[in-house]
Image (cartoon, rainbow, N blue to C red):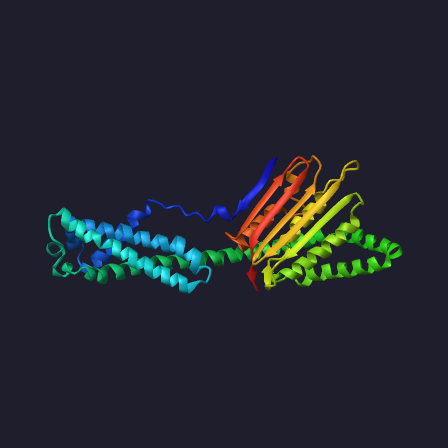
Length: 365
């Protein structure tokens, strides 16, 4: 078995903690300290005082922990999915927990210096809850600052990705149309329908209607970024039936489509078709053994699973990946742009077959 292409959401969802972030948070807290005291020299002198150094370290470490917990756990799991109420509750609990963990720094610093909290930090330090008036607002400020930076960065990345996507979509459509509507495809399909007119007029009439629907769909209905999944599936079925007209009798096509959701889900055009076209183009042409294509499409909730496989002959793998100007790598690039972190794609080449599996999360129109 030779794995040709492997891609998916697993590439990006793990965020590794980087140690070089720690100096930034120490610097961030130091700048706040300087601004609060209004004197950089005095702030540096106070910072060298052991109880304050320990307290300062607690601020930097636990505020950083709150920030990264919010950015890399709470936001992807709740905020980005529109679950704002749960996000607000968990964020509030995170802020309180981080602020509470900073407070022991006051007591540890004073204990190491063999002083009471009142002696080290003033009379107000006699009240445990007084510390929240400092730890909670500063933790909220750090979290808000980091969140604003993250959202701004995400917005810029989204805009950039959108520009690239527009260019990719235009190139994809042009290449697809160039491949799909070349004379070879048109004449073979029309000839197949022509011979059916005498052999099976009813089937010829139905095939001509499907051919018309296919042309109309790909010329006029695929200009939007998202189209109804039901329309794309109907177009897929029409294309498969027309392709079958051109196949020999010794090629078996097994199609299984199951939709367990009535939601108005949308999908980017030309995503599913590429896998089907690939299977029909590269199916084996054996004369002494079965030739087959299997297509499985399952939709449950907002999750789509597509499995396309076909029998192959012992030919080069690269031709299976690139064909007609629009290859599977092109589809992978579009998936990266359209569905970042929301798809899994696996392409595998075996000795006697070629398999493609796509799992993706769809959205309502």
